[in-house]
Amino acid sequence: MPLRGVTIPARSTHTATLFFLHGLGDSGSGWAQTGRMMQPALPHVKMVFPDAPSRPVTLNLGMTMPAWFDIYELGAAAGNNSRTDDQGMNETLRSIAGWIKDEIASGIPAHRIVLGGFSQGSAMSLLHAVTTDQKLAGFIALSGWLPQATALQSSSEVNKDTPIFLGHGDQDEVVPWKFGEQTYKAFKDAGWKVEMKTYEGMGHSAGADEFEDILAFLLKTIPPASS
Image 1: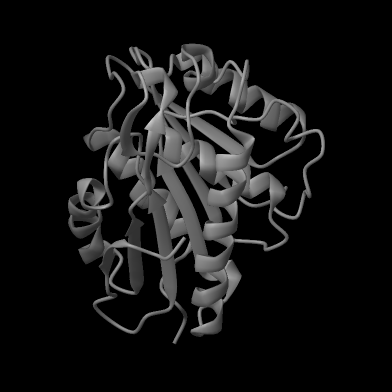
Image 2: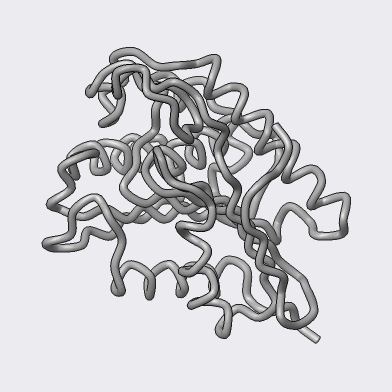
């Protein structure tokens, strides 16, 4: 799919890029304000917040809305892996790969690119981490899960030592915290470089403490280039 959404150019010399995928029913503009809030500390980073295509979502009675893939039932929505839209996910994976390929062609190396997302977007970020042949700088997954149960078992492992940040509220009513914890344990047990932060009292959202942790993660994984 063509890249549509919000792009925030770097304020100084562009040496790194963040792609961040929104959740179900949202848009890139929904997260762009967060990017603008962080950019003074990351002036070298271009931030890209793509828009998902609109498609019928089975869980929501077939209502058409922005979605990276279809969700058939609540278990799949919450990381239970009971039934997944592999075709939709694979289409999105191809789009992500294309966006990253174009960014590399523009002069930003893969090791200076971070891919992140929220909820459904974070599921795609993690799925890309275990299937891509490009080693990136890092991955961010907020209030999410790894959607395909066998993905880690057959993973490419190119990004096995790439930092992965998981953030999850312990009061999440949409993607329960336990699914985030299960995802963390699955990556950890498989030997991946993953960390998880739990935010007390937070539901299916993001907050100031989490934003501070994300900023610290970005400064660590894509710091300003040495002069």
